Image: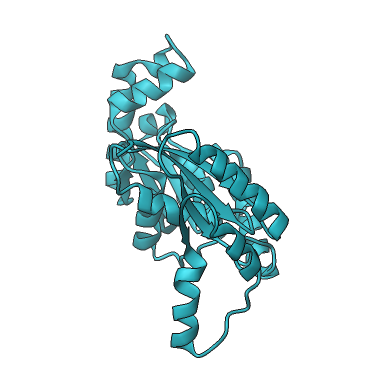
Amino acid sequence: MSHRRTVFFVSDGTGITAQMLGHSLLTQFEGVDFKQVTIPFIDNTEKAEECIARIGTEAANGNGQPIVFATLVNQDVRGVMRRANALYIDFFESFIDPLEAALGVKSSHTIGRSHSAMDKKEYQQRIEAINFAMAHDDGASHRELGQADVILIGVSRSGKTPTSLYLALQFGVRAANYPLIPEDFHRSKLPEALRGQKTRLYGLTIAPERLHEIRKERRPGSRYAELENCREEVQEAEGLMRREGIRCINSTSKSIEEIATTIMRELRITRQVY
């Protein structure tokens, strides 16, 4: 058995759904090196023929039979793709038919419904959330903080910005983030802009050693990146959040997905997946 396989994510839309579902399955197979290729917008038989030719070329390279994860609506396109020299797994074919039988309703067979702007209200909500996160990144603006679903706080480089953007992009959550700095620790108080928003605050902390590694890449040789300074800032930030009764999660070994899910669960934020 080859320990290197090429995996194709084939879709008549963006390919995001095929990637997400396929990747979830692939993570269960440790020790296999997967070369992952996404081929979006395969929405007619001509494109499907080109796609299976590309898959066939990869199969001829001798790295084992390719694997294809597909989300395809059109039956004719599916028919072409089934001829591919590959292990072919079509998620829609696997799940739509049983769902139709269980619900007693035919699906719309509409291409790209899961990642499109077809639902204007939800799409606009997501765009507004992204704009909000960008406008309120790193304490850039104090305006409209009361409209935030969550305000992430923590020392610089503890993961606030990527978590805020993920919450906005994936769930349409209005997430602001605000850095805790040495001046806050000297005052032993939250920044003034945050004192009236405690129900929305959620803290991120991080292991000082990991923070040191991240900061020295950004500002090598600086006091900001010194391990001792990182230890002091993390200790002060954790103490401040503890005194203020602010819930907190350690981001050191957790993925953004895990952090975001924990925050939404503990703050009881409605989860809308896009």
